[in-house]
Image 1 (cartoon, rainbow, N blue to C red):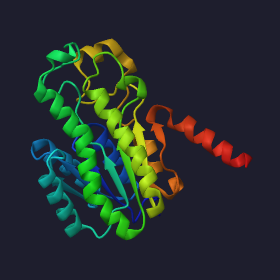
Image 2: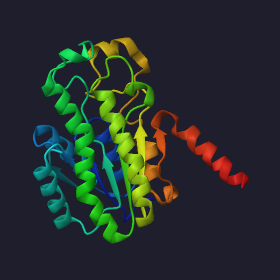
Image 3: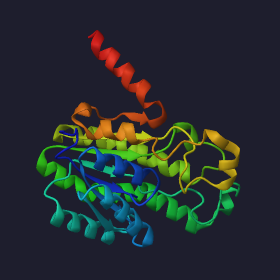
Image 4: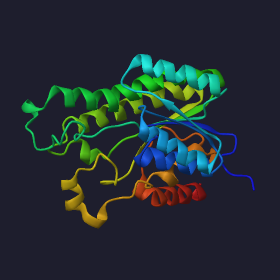
Length: 259
């Protein structure tokens, strides 16, 4: 049976675990060819092996999105393997716990290593990857970029420095790029889970506080399948919430039916 994403090629950064891995899996099962990129190591190797068992249409590339040279090597390796890129999913990210939980530390005592790692991964990384791959989409005359983020509320919560500002910066960039790239046939949208999610970014303290309200890492799957498909053609500059995706889609479809 023909699957909705047959013929689609997608790249997922941060695809070795969490929501990135689950999105890669969902895209593969729906017929897409998927490249996952993540820092090299056993985690990436295990993820690739599991995805390869589901579909041969997957490949894995080691990359550190914080490093311009590493991203350039990723783009070159991708171009040797694939002739086109339909969907770029910027998902590689880290939380405040990347060097130990800093959420309770006053901003003036934050370790600079933690600050730079979070900003370089969550903002600079999205910029570097987009900068490396958008020229391929420009030559194609079309493409879709999805930037994974967090809720607006989380961005400004106490204890969310530097994580919140890193996501606010990537959201601002996404909205700028949506305007700049629209005439070139490229859409840019933002996707966030809608609450604390069962990933490596969630600290034990937050897990204990949230309890059974913790969202599963599959929370973005329905939304990403929509954004990767022809059903989302022409939609750009939107911020979708995985938890509320069905309600958002129903509302949109109802509005379309009224016109």
